[in-house]
Length: 80
Image (cartoon, rainbow, N blue to C red):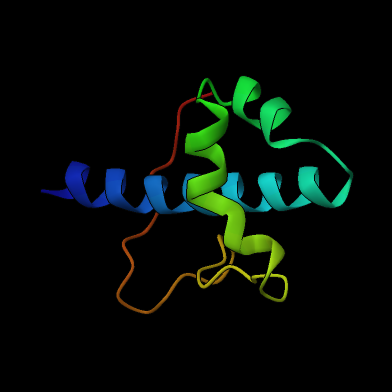
């Protein structure tokens, strides 16, 4: 069960990182086509997933890796 919880936590971190990267790319002037290529998506899929970034204020992550919510599992320690 711990592995499933860890996977969920890592997935949330990656989703936040992806959202921030898309927002940064759009702010820097990248097109939806460029973002789609980088993420191996269609332009349509990229736009549908994140177009609201352009109509809302910058979205802050709801979970920070350094400050996870109290009920969040502790991230796994990866071997070096």
